[in-house]
Image 1 (cartoon, rainbow, N blue to C red):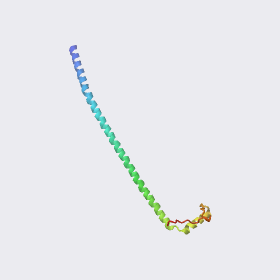
Image 2: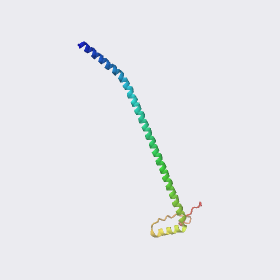
Image 3: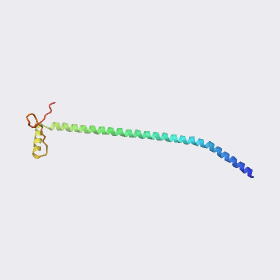
Image 4: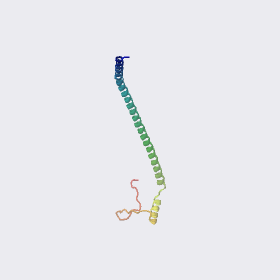
Length: 126
């Protein structure tokens, strides 16, 4: 093969390579953008699912807290019912006097019109 034929074959190969790059590069760019778009869409879907799961967890926690508060309130109400049935004015007076003897209670004097302390206060609404 002579030098002219080698140069011609080299030039043809160079033209084929350049033409291939001219075709492949735009196709590759479109393919890369398509993959990038799909990745962004998938990431957005995952972020949406994470947000939904977090909201569901917060809702469940709020429901459990509500149930706990209801149970606690029912327990307090039941304890108050039991105490209100078992307390008498005599018991309260005895407990107050007992506290005066052992020093475990505080006495707060509330002045009245006659400057005498109130030993017993009643709810006037009932």
